[in-house]
Length: 195
Ligand code: HEC
Image (cartoon, rainbow, N blue to C red):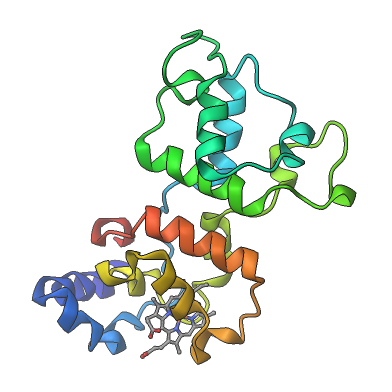
């Protein structure tokens, strides 16, 4: 079922992405289609902390305020359990997109309010990342395939789309909108992702 309508999608994309914009009707044939989305910042942080010898505890990270560049530099300065010190530090094995996704997630969502932070907290207690927010909020009305548009890769445009009248009712906080926008602009959804 899902495959049939996604074949339709693939041909729409083949016609051309600008034309595809006018063809949204077809894309809405597959509500709830849920592709395997790239990892979000929360998953990536859990993976990094698993192999990081020297990183702070989750509660310590949760109260830190750093820019994207500062978060990246922080993890590059840490030791990896197998590789020790290296240029990538605790980020060994992550792609550039994954590093950007992680750094954006941390810069946008941290520091957390003090009341939500406690000793021994797990990564899962940190704010939801772009992938989780997409799965929670973006598949009820239309397929994620609507995201296959290079024009929307610019963060500001994503913010405009998500604040247009179709979407305002979802009631996402500004922080969550910003997280989704950052996640999608770093990880544009490709036709293959939505098979
Ligand atoms: C309440 C229903 C609803 C939800 C939930 C929803 N959308 Fe939409 N979305 C729409 C409608 C309606 C349109 C316009 C469809 C059309 O133009 O034919 C749309 C269109 C879009 C478009 C095309 C650009 C545009 O503005 O027309 C994008 C991109 C998009 N949505 C992304 C998202 C993302 C990302 C989420 C999750 C945060 C989301 N949508 C959740 C209803 C929804």
